[in-house]
Amino acid sequence: MCAAQVPHLNQLQRTFEKQGLTVVGVTGESVEDTEPWIEQHKAEFAYGYSPGLLAFFGVTSLPYAVLVNSQGTIVWKGHPAALGEDWIKIAVRGSIQEPLYAWPPAAAAAKEALVRRRYAPALQAAKDLDPRYAKMIKRRMAHLVGSMERATKRKDYLLAKELALRVFRQCEGLPQQETARERLRELKASPEISRLIEAQLQLRNLVQRAERTRERAAAQKLLQEIKRLMLQHPKDVVGQHARREALVLEDLIKSMP
Amino acid sequence: MRIERALAALAPRLGALLGSLLLASPLAGQVAGMPMPRPNLEGLSQSKAETIGELEGRALLLEFFAHW
Image (cartoon, rainbow over all chains, first blue to last red; front, side, top):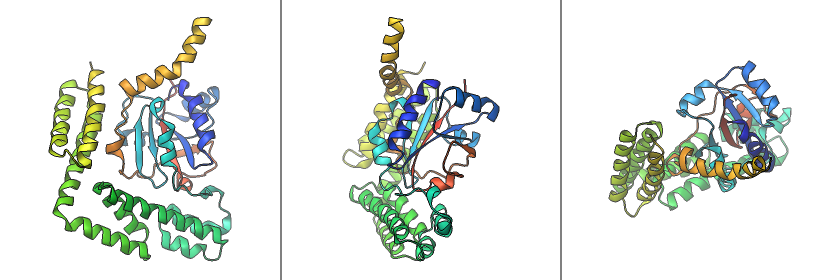
C-alpha cells in the first residue's frame, strides 16, 4: 500500500464493515517502521505482520490486494485501485451476521468450533444459547452448500469439487456431509467432468506461473499455452476462463520491458 | 496550486487506469475457488478481533503494504 491508498481503504472499511468486510493491512516490515507510518497516514483498518503471506502470494510489487470471501475463498487479487465495489458485494455474501469477536463468553465453545470450521460441534455448543446463534451457524452452512450447488449448476466443476470437499470436511456427521459425498461421487464418476477439472487445474497452473514471471518471452510462451486451452475448450468454463486470462496476460505483456 | 488540485482530482482515475492496465493482476476467474489458508498474522492491531481466527465468517481484504 502506498499512502495514496489509505483514504480509499478507510472508506471501504467504513462502507462495508456492517456488511461483513474487514480490511487487514499486511506487512513484512518491522513494528518500528510500521506503527509511525500507520499513525502518520491515519490508517483506520486492522493490520498485522506476516512476511510469509507475501511469499505465499508471490508479491513482488506493492501495493497489492487479495480479496477473500466470507467462506475463505480467494475471489480477486491485484492492484487495490482496480478493485471494484461489485467484487466486495459478492465477497461479503453469506457473512456471519454477528462477528465472532462480538460473541459473548457464554458462546465461547460455539465460537471456537466455528474458528476451526467444524459445524457439528458448533451447533451442539449453540444448543444452550440464544437461538440466534444456531440460526447463524445454519445460515453459514446453507450458504456453503448453496455455493457448491451453484458451481455445479454452472459447470464450474473445479470450484464445485473444492467446495464439496470443504462441505464434506466441515459438516462431518451432519446431513450436509452426505450431500457433499454424493456430489463428489457424481463428479468423479464422469470422465468428461474429470477431463474438465484437469483442464481447469492446468489453466490455474499456467496463470500462476504467468503471475510470477517478469520475462516477456516466458510470459508469451505461457500465453500461447493458455490460448491453446481456449481453442480446445470453445464452449465450456475452461474456454471462458482461458479467454479472460489471455486478455489480462496480453495487457501485462505489453507493460513488460 | 491549480495544477496540484487538478492532479489530486485525477489521481484516483489515473490510479485505477494504471492499475487495470499495468499493475493489476485480476486473474480472478482463475483464482476464484482457491481456498485461502488462514493467514498467520502476528501483532494484529486496530482490530476488534484479538486473532485472525475471530474474523472467520467475514470477507477479508488483505492489503499488502510497506512504509516507504
